[in-house]
Amino acid sequence: MYTMIYSLLYIANNIYSMVSKYSSKMDQYRAEADAIVSENGQYVKDLINRLLELDARIYCYMGIDTSKTELNEAKLTSRYIYRLIKQYDYDKGERLLNDYLKD
Image (cartoon, rainbow, N blue to C red; front, side, top):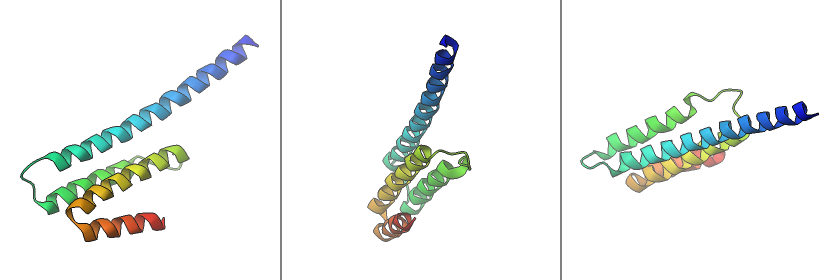
């Protein structure tokens, strides 16, 4: 009985560490987006391209084994990036957000 309890605790601990690793990864992506925006001397086109590259990198490692929680975190991070883009190019940011909301 004790071994079953310990094994359940072990599994729960592993799941928690996987989820916390993923959320910290999304925090890293948001911090990287903020760093891109805060750099001085960039053209708007280059800034938007870098933000879209970051957005593409978020989805690069997602597969069929990705949980709904991880997918929702990625979507929220994408929305954050699209809002940053909207600050620099209103029309493009608005189109990205509208396409995002359709999904």
